[in-house]
Length: 116
Length: 114
Image 1 (cartoon, chains in turn orange, green):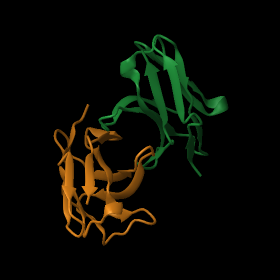
Image 2: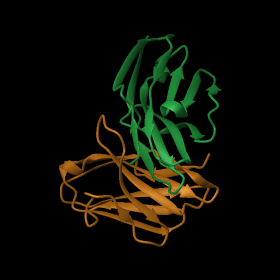
Image 3: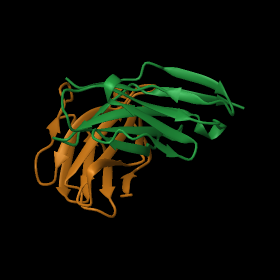
Image 4: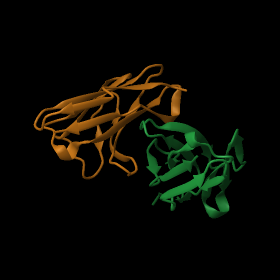
């Protein structure tokens, strides 16, 4: 299968700081990337969909100024949580589709964000 | 509207028992895909199976088997002779042919006791 990496795997930060999470497709070109958020004991919630070179499409209720998504290349998308607060603490998962992996989403291992 | 329902929030069985996880979906599309994913405590999603709407053949992979029934809009997952390592949260998901977005069920937490 296709491989997607995420970095960092976990991060702890102080309230008010910004955190950037990277999502990379390692062996295929990801024309579309997705960002999910998962609270404890809950299902995945889609935050936004991004196509390479275009602005991300955010789901209803997700603040685009709070969660900045950049998909500047076919192998990299970034999610920046700006001015993070404790309520932003969550498990963030990215997935990617495209190229030889166009029929399904391949998931990264996730990033656990804790905001103190 | 599309929807995926996993009615079982949590299932607990003793090792070596068989267990079935239910998944019921709703869609008006004729072409769609169904998925099962495993999420162990580490959090990383593990892809288990994808089935398209035109393929109703049941699938068996080792101790895992899947029963796809379009007549009841169900795509159930059975683990035979369960093992402690099967303990995880299992998600069923639906995707339309028209886009890549996945519609997720709420997940079923499976606990296998030794």
